[in-house]
Length: 329
Image 1 (cartoon, one colour):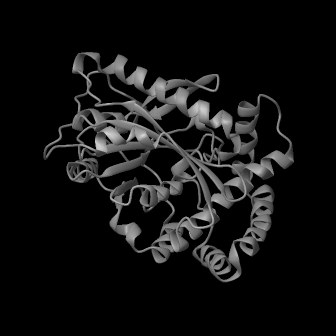
Image 2 (cartoon, rainbow, N blue to C red):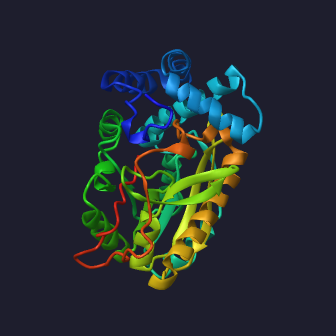
């Protein structure tokens, strides 16, 4: 597989049996015992998964501004595996045993006090599962997550088994664009927070280039079009793994109510995406081993540039006409 192959073409890193074994060890043996199983997983990726190993090395070279050692590549893969393991605990036992430093939660307050829905934009930097801490800090909140259930089906089946409520709170990004947008609209109309990962573009999805770690990278525009069509506020969220059982959950207000005039669309999208890329870069520099895009992020295939004269999507029955919006889990 070429280094520039689209991330959706990557084979899953684990079989259904492997996920069941990990979940069994984690639940029966405890987190300490389960973490010992991460070392053979890291060894497997270092020895057998060349594309991911090379992607890790290339990423760390950018983030650290020097050639990484094999140990640092192993640390990168171990960090990813550790957050996957912790999802098992967060779903089966809640946040007990985890220390989560929450910052900027008051960014949500102005909207929640009015019962207004919010779009929460995250990324494949760290653990989005750390958002579960919201249920403890703000138990009245309803959080829906937009993700592609089909991309890593084995992992999704395991997580569904641990917490059947997951399925009820997922908006499946594997649907057609209009269905996704209508479900988002229904959720926010009822005051929900709708979370989605906005750093990866799906095959054929429109993108906008932005400067990111010294080179142009392509980011999807669909999330911004959805926010503009529904005139929703946008808040950024970063759930960073800080080692051991420590996480940092940071919220940042980004747009109080996104609106894009048709005539200013190209310039406005470019500015929004660049601002987002700068905030993503800021947090990625603070936690480089939390970068979980194990492919050539700067040369990803199968994405197209935004047609400058394309119409914004409707918020009605034709919603999502121009929105691929196939966000990935």
